[in-house]
Length: 360
Image (tube, rainbow, N blue to C red; front, side, top):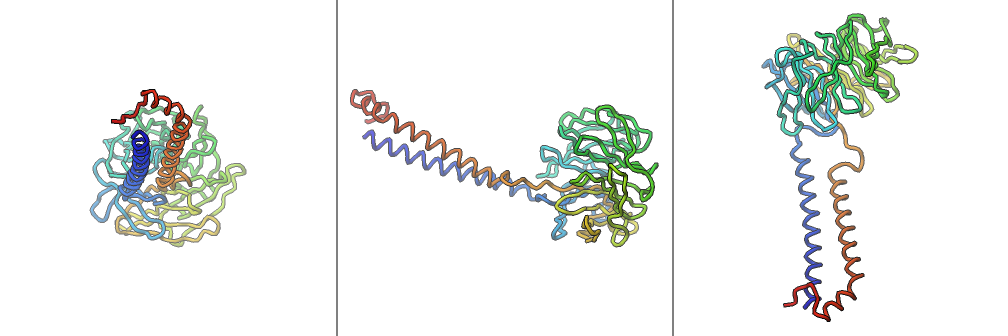
């Protein structure tokens, strides 16, 4: 009778294992299925006008098909500028006019729900540029207040890194942690030490005009700058201060937001709504070839752009499910091994009437 109960328990354990694996798969795949607003690799674009209604929002654009999906609009958003994805997967938008002076707004990527993370204090109608540092903090440039700020994405606490004598626009955090900022007034690209606030001019003038808008950093450390004045994307060697024209004119209307990834340069190409729709343009970083991915529909007054992260191999939901399954199988085997080692003792306890299994 004891043997039958042990076999039954083993079968039940196996069934529980399979059930748990199935449930974990359903849960993980279900979680992925609910995040249908945004897919990995989508381009997230801030727009000042969704359609012709004068609304403001965030649009996801499929870089292959150009399909547009409204992620979130209106509510707190009035004039969204820079956009990034935080370490926790949330979307953060720097809005120049929100909360009567500018604010950082967090957007849930699954629901589109908006939450004001930080406002007032050091903002002065000018949070335009924003990036993420290695610790997950938001680095924000406020053009109105002429300040570079560090913001805790959880609490919204603002810390002034440095005051500037220029109006900071687009910015990025480099591999070493330095902050790279675009200064349109002086036609400069400036490096800022995040610890001391020391400011150093990397490049000035030449191809850079008063239309300088945003910056991005390539894998090799070169800096890309968007310039709406010359309708161009410019590459800058930060060591030797060599400027190279990557792409100019052609399909570009007024390049503002800039991001790099997936082997391409992506541009939020601005055109005032009175002149027509804005567009999202892909540029080949090697030869400057331009491809318009999306135009119009929801893309009006486009300003900021970023890429929804693509999971590293072995970190997606199926990989997690497999890891859970392997862990459970290991646990099951370990239990079975321990049970086999104690079988003689268990048998002796059974013979003496001390078997812990119910034999009635």
